[in-house]
Length: 351
Ligand code: FDP
Image (cartoon, rainbow, N blue to C red; front, side, top):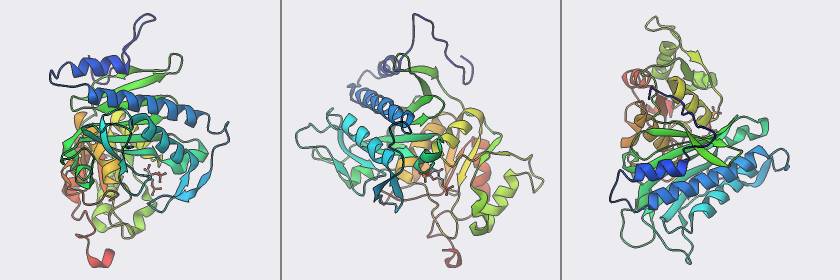
């Protein structure tokens, strides 16, 4: 099969996500099926969320809920709904020992009446949610790590593992069609929801991101608060320093949508640090790590400017990180030009 080929299903034969996961599991004779079970549960949650997103306007459930989430942002009602759908889809299967959501301050424990399992799930239930009211694609992002502590319940040490220890990661994009892309470390594979039969069908096996790409996704309204190295990098991507041809700027402002376009078409998404937000905005555990795992599996790369994202040792459930992610050739330019990456490394003058 060629790069990014789309699978052709026939009227009488389709490859569902379930079949694909089972076939991948067979490559691991010692697999217990727990991870596969968790992935099906997440696919079910994705279908339920897709349904809510699609009917959001009709059902009059748009708009802000009363709550403000732990990041200080106003939660949209769909965030709350998506969060609950995911928790309820996965809490009873005996596969997880704990969960952490971008929408909740602490670890979410498995209810006492359910069995605990060997995995932890970290997720952003509805990323890009400030775009919901204007009908822009939003997404769900998830990351799975193995429990490393003793005892049946998961604790903070289980959650705060570097991204290279992920055993699975994925995202769902609720766009013109709903797509789920996941990896278990054997390539990145995409599935498109067929609304007629209600199944995710294999559409993009073994996704390969081009080595360099056309698209630059960055919010350049922050230019006045970028540090000099970031400004120089952006001038390079725009072809203004004469070192390369200009990239095409595309910024939806919904991470999953920007990432997905660049994964398939090539290019880079950047959310650099700035003097107001020295660690940028995106969350290491719920956004950067899972997308970094996927992009590396597709042949791309992800850095905070000076460190590979998957090697960052997390210290906090909700910590943020600068992010440059996408085609390897384009990300390598960021690694060669960025000199500071974290708040600690930033000069006091710009903190
Ligand atoms: P949102 O606040 O709408 O949830 O992580 C949050 C996120 O969206 C990303 O999806 C998006 O890429 C980014 O924030 C956009 O932030 P800016 O508006 O600062 O560009």
